[in-house]
Length: 328
Image (cartoon, rainbow, N blue to C red; front, top):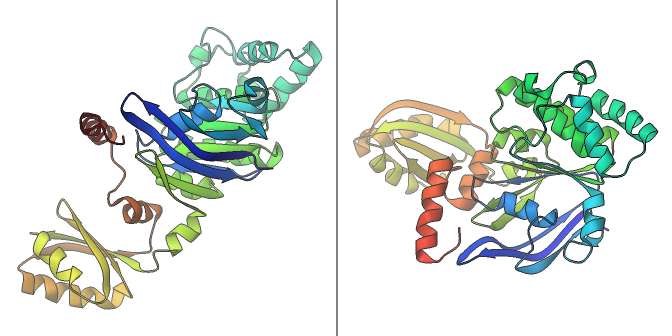
C-alpha cells in the first residue's frame, strides 16, 4: 500500500482544468515534493487529497482510503499546514494545540503529553505560554506544523511551508521538516516553487505545470538526466549568438531569455574560447560568461520551456488560457 496514490486525478472549474489527469504514487515515510509555479495545480491537488475539494474525475487514495468515499478516515490520517496562517493569535501556542487536540477527541493526559512532544519537535517549548500574536513568522509556521502533528497523522501536507519567510528561517523550517520525517516516521507531501527547497528536502520530486505532472524522479536523477554542463552568457545583442550556438554540434540546446543565453553544452569549460569567437562572428558583445552544473531550474526549463514564472506572469498566463478555454 502506498501512502498516496492517484489515478487520472482531474479537477475542472468551469472551462479551466486546474489538475489534468495526474497519476502519482508516494511511498510511506517519503518526503515528496510537487514543484511548480503559482497556478500550476499544486494546491488544488493537495485540496483533493485532503478532501477539501471533490475531484471532477479520476480517483485518489490516502493511506488506503479513497478520498471520495472514506472522507473521515482520510482526515484522521492526515495533518495539514496551509499557505495562509491558520492559528489563533489571541491564544498562546499551547492553547492553540490544546484546542486542536480537543477537536480530535484527545483526552487530557494524552493532550498534555502530545503537546509537549510536538513543541519539543519544533523547538517552541520555551514559547508555549506566549500569545501567538507575539510570534515571528517562522515561529507561527513551526506552531502550525506542530498543530498538524497533534493527532499522530500518517501523512502531513505542507502547502508552500516557507512562503514569505527569510532565507535563514526557511533553512530552520527545513530542519524541522527533516526531523519530523525521521522521528515521527511520517510521510510528507510538500508543495513549493522554491527549487532549492525541493532539492534539499525531497526524496523525490514531481514537476507540475498547467495541471500536468511532467516528470517524477529524485532531484539527483533529474539533474543528471540533463547530462551536460550549463553555459550562461550575457551578450548584446543576444539573439544572433543564441542562433549561432544552436547550430554548433557541441551545443545540445541554447535558449535566449532577455539578454541572457543559457546553453546545455558538453565539456563547457573547453568551449568558452569557441563561444567567444562565435560571438564575434555573430556581432554579439559578451559581458559575462559562466559555467555550472545542472540545477533543478534547468530541469524545469527542459520540461516546460520556461523558468518558474512569478505571480504576475502566472496570473496573466492563466487569464489568457481561460480566455481560450484551455488548460491553466
